[in-house]
Length: 154
Image (cartoon, rainbow, N blue to C red; front, top):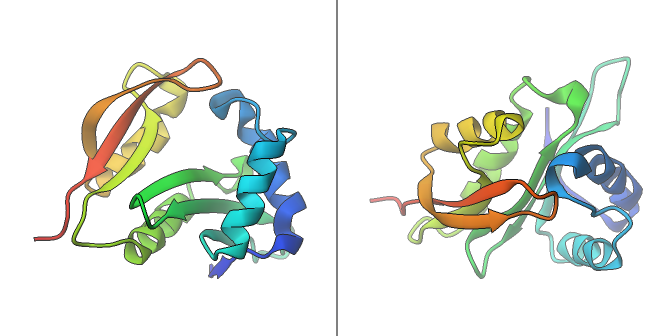
């Protein structure tokens, strides 16, 4: 699996992935602000993706991540249903962290420990060294979130 910088021509694949995860994230794919933000992240080389390379689904978007270097945070991470459990989220997250400032904390908003459907995402962040930092409120899907922090490298 190779991580690649996403290009504007990848937009429809990203929107398909966004539609798939909307039950957990809230409406995105048809929201102009989300589409504009996604295009901007692609243009600024802040959107990374992994495509499947097996014979049945070659070229299909397996997952994507968007970072914000200014705020040193992960803005969005999603893995397609057929690709979950294959290490794609971990691969994307490690690459994103490598592209952020190691001398500053890294932040991400994810589900709190009461959201069963978000347990895998939460476990991923915990396993990479993130800890709960503060309450994140409800996301657009109405699910409880938390802001997690990964401390700077010593």
